[in-house]
Image (cartoon, rainbow, N blue to C red; front, side, top):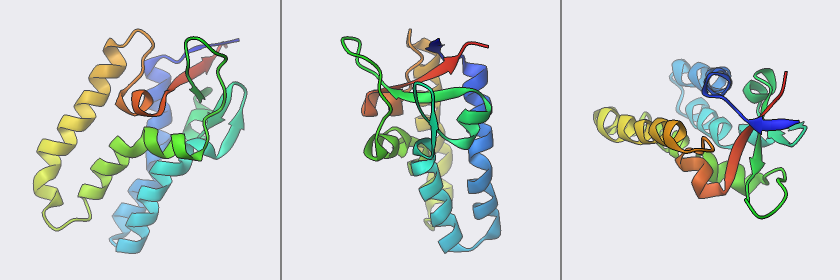
Length: 143
């Protein structure tokens, strides 16, 4: 049976999923950096998981992304929904490749990511901004 995923499991999943991006960014090569950003956008749709789709980090943390409609059954999100739900995070990552992005990163990036965390903490269903935009939520498996 699936339930709303806790923040600890979601944080673990995000950390694992960030590793390929961090490696690409650390390389210093702009093309690898852009591939890392693409990873951030698309990772949620890579692995099938019971109740939805999962990135490798979500698979390890035993959570998955599911389309959410309070009046309907949950279903796995499609590729477009994966991209939309990850736009806030990937948008912040894109600041790093722009020449003045490192100046904007503390204000825009931290503000946007702070909003994501705030919403995930305050929303009764744990839905962050990306989840609200895409109509998704992160579900956890009972252990």
